[in-house]
Image (tube, rainbow, N blue to C red):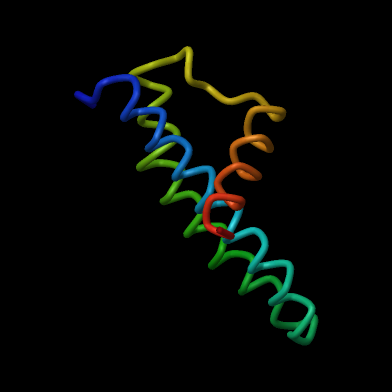
Length: 87
């Protein structure tokens, strides 16, 4: 991936944000569905999250290992991105 590190950081943060949004949607969705539908929905959301991660976070980290987020960074980015959208 031929991106400047500043652009790579934006892409990584977007991937984290997208996965956080999918995770939130899954939580809400499972509360609305009967339990026999949970496994299928979890698989669908899991595949979507994997695709997002493959095309964003994983690619960025392959090019810039110093941008690999630990759990604390992941949460901080997800919260910051959500705040940006809330304004």
